[in-house]
Image (cartoon, rainbow, N blue to C red; front, side):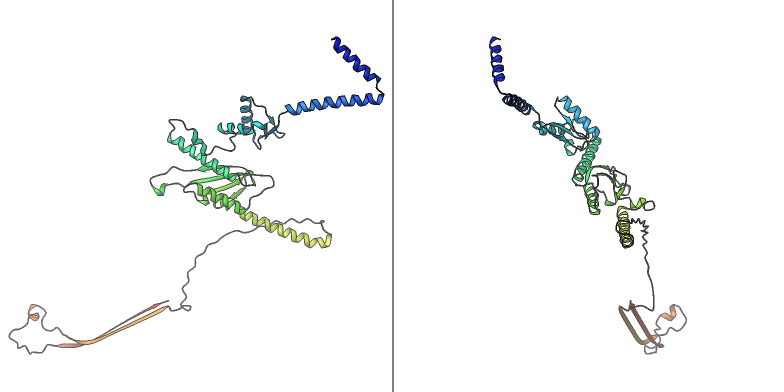
Length: 343
């Protein structure tokens, strides 16, 4: 203690002997040194956080947080509550651990569901697991589209029967959640339909329906909704026509009232009724002969004439009569004509 007291007195003596400017400079230097040391210690001990998952819904975010608490891992929740951050050194390890537990559920469990099968699984459970895996695999593929935020697929696969006429057709429904401001092109929608139909045995493209998260029908169901609504392509054509007419009206009136002083709204009602008609006409005045064939056959000769009393006696030769006796005959002419014309 005496040594410390003497050291403090010496430091104070030196400090008091300094001019006022040097005293201020010494204080600033000491404060900067202390601040640098504190910052260095904080930087060396701070934990760098990186996103573990982003874009999670509330259910998946809660499941991830509960699992991190069980593992006693430090974490931070993003501003919107849909992202979770963990220490950078543990990101990939935690992702593998979460995947092993099947978290998060929104990404679905694909064919890896068969990697942890238990003994005694029934055939029904196997079919259900296969359908779940197929739905998740298709959803993962569709989520690769840059415009799609998430998707869900529902497959209705009927049981196979022994009789073909009693076999029901499989059906599929796809629900897409698009990113804000994004829209799928018609070719992309047709690609999704073909992808789903090609992945399910016996599924026809006509039995695949696609809707967005707002309930708008994007594809499929034209037969069911022909009376109550339009298909996506018909709506797109109608909207495009309205926009073209609005631009034409605005350009026409801009020369009169000035640019930006007019706003036009056009509502177009299109008739998309389709009629299929089969007509077959027979007009004798408008024909063309493709081929024509005629044949004629003629013949002439004599043949015996029947005479006498009908019966056995008249048909039996008379042995008492001479052989040179004349038999009555008559002359016969035969004509036959055929004609074939192809038009």
